[in-house]
Image (cartoon, rainbow, N blue to C red; front, side):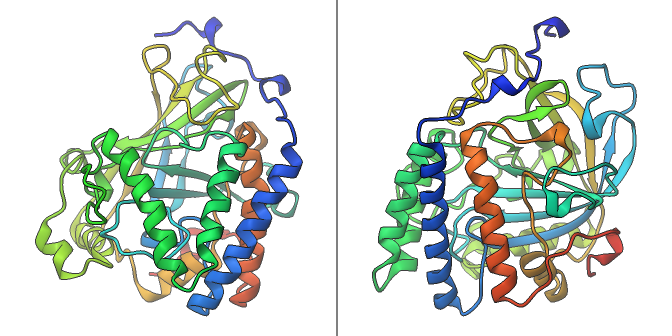
Length: 369
């Protein structure tokens, strides 16, 4: 185990503003806003500019482990406590695409009952905290310059008459190559490789965040044996063929009809800013230098995971924002700084166009059954 004296202490200098960062940020957000409007015209309903499609919305608990050492006992993890959580499983694209299409999957966690002033001024008094995770350890477009290139390419495809199909295909083939490289999909570049079971994946913050006095990344991995058994497991072709647009919703719903699931949350503390950079999200931090250390357990019990009421609440009412957090867990790096404005802009547009209130739950009972 790495000695505590080797963990990089957090200070404001771990972040470095990039050349023309504000200008590039504004270009990215403006492009996203234009695509959002095109998507609204397509669906006649406003959707998220990323992770637009949900597959399951779960009620669960986050149990912070007792007697954590000082370097792990930071922020929300300072004291052993059990928090109610809402978790949304999703697909990463900004369009509603078939489940059969290769794509990154997301796990958004909203923790309820978190005391303390939050980072975003408009949500400073909210009793919630968000963590946003994806089933891949890095951000392939790890800097805002690369992200701008990707975003402008997506927008250019969005201008033609078949933009939804073309934008999805462009994104999916790129994702296919990345997923195939790590064994999460085949390498055929055909849009027919959905990857392994969504409940068996490990999910990552991808980018760095402040972890109290330190700098870290977090992950959530299968813990209970029934979930570990799903890790890397291919989905039954009969289930896929029965409904290639919604089989991910079905397998989550079928599992939680009777099943209980446990996951473990881990923290990877930065030990070297050269090999574990903050400003380039495309660099995977080596686990042989700093392994993930367990800090909490997520527990989900049997439930109805995708009722119409629950879907509308999660898709149209709730927002998940990595910057909605205690200051001790502030996201770090230029790719995350651009996401701050992007999330705020997208959420405001989505709630306005769908005529839905922008609220944070005060209790878990606000999540519909």
